[in-house]
Structure formats: structure tokens, C-alpha cells
Image (cartoon, rainbow, N blue to C red; front, side):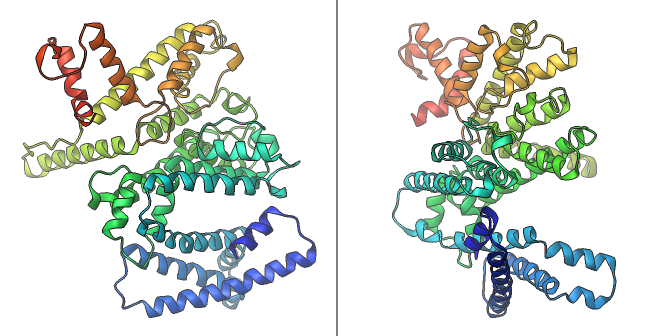
Length: 491
């Protein structure tokens, strides 16, 4: 059924073939509704996982709603406008196809449990998964309905690879080459590549009727970068939920800032633009639906949009462990404050939530953003920033400091960038984002440790050590060594 959906979306059909496909889909809906109803009845007393039971109930409800609309049950209630609207909406081909794709993804992901039970290196599975998604993306982008005038194999492979690996490089113009179908395919590839292929697929394994075994959790521990095996499932759910919430908030803010933009004529255009760029920004991908990116005349001076995208890039580039650590920190501070207000007492013991790695990543990120902002503002004041207002120059300089570190967007004419900042931009691109994030590069923690090591070698020390002559004498050096000491131990 899923391949029928793909064929109907990606290829042109004659009227006869289209009618046959439509009849097949309607028959499939009946079949799936019966199957899920029987599964629900037979497993109502079984001890299923919470996610599996929730998935079964949600799927059954969705199926029943579509079936009721299919047989025009809503018309029995008379000429109620609301019910008519509901019936027309759920029987829309797009809604039906999304439901069938959801069913396919759930059922397909359940079979991935087989991979986790094999004695296979997780990193090999990780690499093979990326290759599989790149090949699937290539095939989908080569469908006739995905492009306006067709696309070569090498361009399809490059675009699919760039989307899954969230690099943002393109060999064809995304805005003019790909149709709406093609852009949605690219958007899905961006999302999967941004949060990680294995993380994305493993999330749907949670809906399996079987519980995660200890071996499964050991397998996934390296995928989600979790040290505690018992926290793997929680971490997996947190990553997906945090990604969805952040992207939804970002899309809403972008939509509100382009609501009165005359270049967007319909609500659909504004919604699609907001969703596409929110996902692309959070995943540090740099793909845009406009030919000139954010430098396009429609959003060139939309500085609030630039700020929203900048913060999405920063949040996505910090890394999930960093965000979760600060979430725990803020939650504890709020609880402590409420306890102080209600019970007139506070918790004296403060758990060590903000660990060394978090401090290193956050401090390095702030330093790089400030350094990039100042150098961009000074170097480009009379070049690419010429003619902008003071607010525009500040926002553009801030955006120009954030985006080189693996995002790839641009709000200025890149050919007008001066040579000094080109060199600085190369440095920022080389450093990149933080570990366990949606960005690339050598990572901020590696760069910070390398700088500390260079300073140590410049002072005649052969190694970073906590004993002997190599131990730092100044307070600043002592603080730096304390920050990086866990990395030295692990090394």
C-alpha cells in the first residue's frame, strides 16, 4: 500500500490507473481498520508497553474516522456544516496518504528490532542506515512529479546526500527545480538527518508490542549518546519531543513575522515557508525554498525572522545533552523558588547538574558567537552591511556569526564579503557545532581542548597533567584544567 501511495504521488497516471489506485487505497483502508480493530480486541488484556497501547488506540481511532467519512456516515446527521467539513477533510487524499504512511512507518520500524538483537557493531548499522536513506531519497527525488523538468542521477544523489547529512550544499536550485512534492521529500530527509537516522527510526520501535531488552538498550546507548543504559528510552523520547516542540515554536514565530509580508500570497505559502525553514534551521541544514535563500528580497530585511532562525541554529548546534542539562537546572531552580515561596524554605543541597562538558560547550559557543559578531560587524561595516540601519547591521552581523558554523544560510550577498571575514568564516565553519548536536565540524569541545593544549605547549609543557611541573600555576590555567580534566582522563 505504501508503494502504491509513492507511485500515485510521484508519477503521472491515466484516468483508468488513477481510478484503480483509488479503489485499492479504499480497500486497504477497510482491511487496516479490521486488522487494527482485531489487534486491539485481542491485546486488550495483554501487558503491552505504554507506547504500544497508545499507538494502537490512536491508529484505530484515526482509521475509524476515515472509514466513517468514506462511507458518508457524516451525512446521516443531516446538513451539519461542521460534520460535512470534517468528512471532507479526512477523506482528502493527502490526509489519507499521510495516515497510510504513518501506519507503514510504525509497522516497518517494529521490524528494526531484529537489527538490535543481532551481534552487529552499532556504528556499522549507523553507516548503512545513512546509505539506505540516501539511496531512498535519491529514488524519490528522481520521480517525475518531484521536479519540474527532471533531474540527473548525480544531482539527485548529491541533493539527497546533502539533505541527509545536513550540509546545505546544492547543485540545482531548490526553489525552481523541485516541485512541492520534491521539497517535502527534501524536508523529510533534513529532519531524519538532523536528529539522526537511527534516533528517528528507533523512536518508532518504542511502539512495538515487545519491551526493549537489555541488549537493545545497549545497542541504542551509543546511538543516543547516553551513558546510563536505563535512561536510553527516556533520552530517545526527550530528543524527539524536544525537536518537535522547538521546531513548532520556531515555525509559529516565523509565520507570525511573515504574516503581513506581501510576497506570500496565501496562508499555505506562509505555513510551508515557516515549517520548512524552522526544520532546516534547527537541523543546521541551510536549505531554503527561495532562490537567494534568506537574502531573497521577500525576507532580506525581515530581521525578526533572521533572529528566530539564528536561535534555532544555536539551539540545534548546542547538542541535546547540553539542552537537557540546562532543562534540569532550570527545573530545579524553579522548584526551589516555589518551595521558598510556599513553604518559606529552600533546598540547600544543589545537585551538580551542569557538568564540565556543558560549561565547556556553552562558554566556547558564546565566545565564538561574540568573536564572529564583532569581527563581522567591523570587517563588513562598509562592505556587505553598507546601507543597512543600525538594527539591521547588528542583526545581520549576529546572523553572520551564527550561520557559518554548519548552518549555511545567508542574509547578505556572499560575493560582497571582504577577504578578512572570509578567513574568519572558514575558521568558524571548521570548528562547527557541539557534540551530539545537529551540526558538524570538529566540535567546540575539541577546539577548546586544542587551544588549551597549544597554550600549554607554548609554555614549555609536554602534556596537560595534574602533577609535576606540568600543572598550571595561575588561577586561570587551573580553572581551564579543571574544566577539561574529564576529557584528559578519558583520553
